[in-house]
Image (cartoon, rainbow, N blue to C red; front, side, top):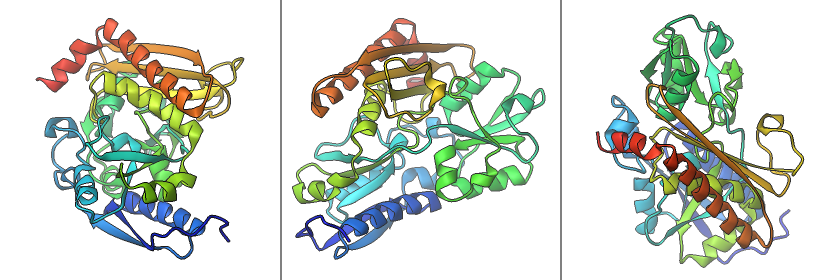
Length: 338
């Protein structure tokens, strides 16, 4: 039984996309809130987004940012919904005026999953094998690692993508590990791509809850779901992307961990939250993998949570500046302005 004070709010409406994964995410947040506030009535408002409707075009070519969130944000503006649950990697770096990310939840696995019916990992793929992904970030890093592979665009929800693999259209496909785990398709994961081979997307594996900035009652209701350590890491990653004016359909990767000062390297614990040393790595790549720019920096955090968040934000800007100094601006400009 919850020992939190029951909120004055009696009904809460969650805006969500209709894919199985999006519904899992919304239902997961609903269940966590009901465990805290048993008397609360929670309804789901199911919405189809632009990104869900256009399935025959690579995301980067559709243009614009927030392809999977704009309609959900409109529901918040119009007060049809109180909160929207997102995969953080789909959320634009600049939020519309009046909306805020009230919660960053504890992060699940940030890695990319290698899924195949024939091969166990990316190294086993034969010369010229066909790999499916909708992500320019995955594409540029996989091509940098294995220039011989053919990357073929793969769109649709998780079930659709797995169906195309099973129909023989691809030798392997790459999906987010956390998404497969959440909808209990772990058995399809043959291996996880090493983070050094394929650095994750900004915010990959994390859920975020968006709400109206002035809705203090909802913000207070959500507060117990917030994870301070995840928040610091994710602020650093999003600051890097924001400084590069990136969206979620560009070849930008960023991954931050919190570790002890004497920790050896990033692979000792992929999803580390322990310690005061914030380590951020960032990458920007050409679509064909011919250039893959890398930058990183570590800082020791100090002070209050708010001060640590400010330090994390500055770290993101610093690593972005390193990438710009190496030529990231020209690579990204060619994608933004083809």
